[in-house]
Amino acid sequence: TSPKEQYRPAYHFTAPQNWINDPNGLVYLEGEYHIFYQHNPFGNVWGHMSWGHAVSKDLLHWQHLPVALEEYKNADDSTQTMIFSGGAVVDSANTSGFFEKGKKDGMVAIYTAHKHANLKGLAQYQNLAYSSDKGRSWKHYDKNPVLDIGLTDFRDPFVFWYAPGKKWIMSVVKALEYTVQFYESPNLKDWKLLSEFGRQGDVSKIWECSSLLQVPVQGQNQKKWMLMLSSGHRQKDYLAMQYFVGDFDGKNFIPQKQDEVLYIDEGKDFYAGIPFGNLQSKKPVMIGWINDWEYANKIPTEKFKGAMSVPRELSLKKTDAGYRLIQAPIELSFIDEKGIDLTNIKVKENLPLKYKGESYELKAEIEIGAAKTFGIKLLKSEGEESVLIYDAAQKRLSFDRTKSGNISFSDRFPSVESVVVKPQNGKITLQLLVDKSIVEIFANGGEQVMTDVVFPTKHEGGIELFSEGGSVVFKKLIIRTVVKKK
Ligand code: FRU
Image (cartoon, rainbow, N blue to C red; front, side, top):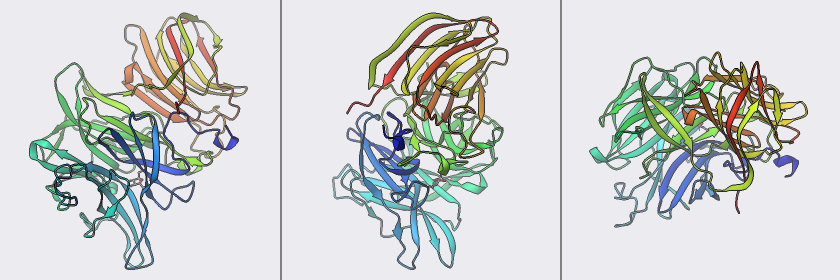
């Protein structure tokens, strides 16, 4: 790899060049998964927001397509309208009337238009665009906007077909009021307010990118409704995502509990995640943006900036405290044979592995012995390491990136974050997706998740197991290099 591309992940989605942030319009149509994404076609920082586009048959190999929706010049003045986040649907019954009679594969995008009007200041409202050729070319609806409440921070529509009521439902945020609004429509053009949900959960920063979906409960023949959204994380003072589990009756969302705060990912770098709105599969699939607005524009990557998570399958687990989200990355079907399989390795102090790599999947099952702390050092070179540490007394898993490599581009970057991971039968399990500058950590089968970016400079890709204050046994340790098949 050229030094410029040193941080480009091998199996995480990035734009061919330039900036990305939120995934948008995740939609499935006739064998193709579509991802649209917040994109600056002209530079490697946020700006000129447009919808980039790619398609995939397996959610792992993506074919890049031309920009789908471009920032446009306003007719009434010299300013521009940016295309902010939103959703996309397949209007198979042609409820919108945008398509030819009998056409079942018409696609409609519902996006936030972000307009800088000279005299009136800033405005945000919801617009439509439609495509008759599977998302390859788009027309804006000539009667836009379809939803404007005269509020500046009003954005990120997520739309899905609500079969019991035979209608479209939209969730959209009043970002600075910590409020999600739900609307209904028979035709995607006329929207009627149903209800509001908000001012609870985490209200420490802002609310963005909400979505409402049904999620199956493990071991039960039942689904619950889940509202997820992007927000602050009040203990960490960074951005994060939170979720509420409850019921939706076609009008109101009612959470399982008041005053409950549940986060999706306890790392620093998982934001603006949304699900595919129209998958027939049992489990919904979510993709999130791997970055944090605290330093997103400053990360030291060239040619590209920002990446998407590996798609995650979502389910719920019923616990005594209520329903909890379980996330599992989809199977990495393009895993290479190269790797290691070890069983019953007793670790007493430091144990460097023979295997080295920067793009791999690691699975471990660890029996907690007498060790006080133990863990795995990743992306290790002389003087650099990204460290996963488990504290047995506190039952806490931490990720320490303070010595991970280049940490100097922002004083908000070096950090240690942690999450409680309770041993099950004296063991914890880890699944790590390491990819050049990305570490996705799934603990105990996806009950706890942390996602972080790191920027090692020496690229030796060392891995070292360690234990302090006693020994620990890695019952299983499996590593597979991940390469993208052409
Ligand atoms: C979330 C967000 C959205 C907005 C978009 C603009 O990351 O701030 O609320 O639509 O990014 O790029």
